Image (cartoon, rainbow, N blue to C red; front, side, top):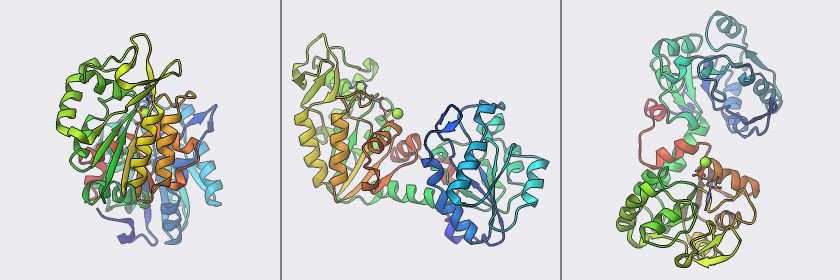
Length: 379
Ligand code: ADP
Ligand code: MG
């Protein structure tokens, strides 16, 4: 992968694809983490006296202009974070954009409008990409979270400009490929969340690398069903039971299932003694202890997916136990996945992890061993 460090950017106009897809509440930015994560790349380019054009999507406008999804509030917030004015242009291609770029001085920053106001963006349209590229000399991708999509601003655009990976993308690839290429053992993966179907590819690929995969979340019931356990009213993907069975066969003892479960009435039961009339909403205290011990002793840990219905107390305990054990682990600790990351942030533990991935879907596809379109083109 070509890296930003190697690029000649001094005095150049650099187009940077970032992920400013921030959560909005009543038109206000509810969380600016996505803006903060690309500050190092922007600061570096400013120091190098580049002229910086930032491009991003926000939400799902589906190829139309949606006023609520304009990037103006993001420009304002970025300006505060950089302590430097950020120009904003309410379009991402065309003569107004070219005019605004011509007005930039060295070190200036210009944020363009939501890319997805144009249907061409998600169609990886070459003509649209060439228009995006027009005012720039160099392209930088620092949007790992969209790099699993072949969209014009991450894929087609690389046909028109020398292209490099920004610092955030570089760290993501380094940490995630480290898990696949040279993990220190014991290597433990913890997989939870809503559905097995979302995670089959990852479980399958990680089974070749890990010493154990600890299962939690609603997906555990699909595995129990595969073992013919009673699962009561718990969530289960009936059409994935055969698949769970084959994963269990393939993984043998490396797939570890919870030994106790917390029911919706808060009672704890052994996993093989679940009642017919209740649902399991979390891993039980004994499982939490076993998992925590394994995690603390590991040299490499990857986690995706909450252990239970963590949005609702007390069913957050399993998830919090895993988060805490990982924060105490001295090895390399990596988390990926929207809800898992939200859970560790809620617990205020994100600084204690080696890496908190900014890409839910992208991190999973990467760990499945798939080639990501936006990363491949930087090779
Ligand atoms: P991530 O975003 O980290 O990849 P997922 O989206 O796959 O995770 O799953 C998260 C969702 O799964 C959460 O909303 C959580 O409440 C739900 N969940 C986890 N365990 C259970 C369970 N036992 N019953 C119902 N929902 C669950
Ligand atoms: Mg999720």
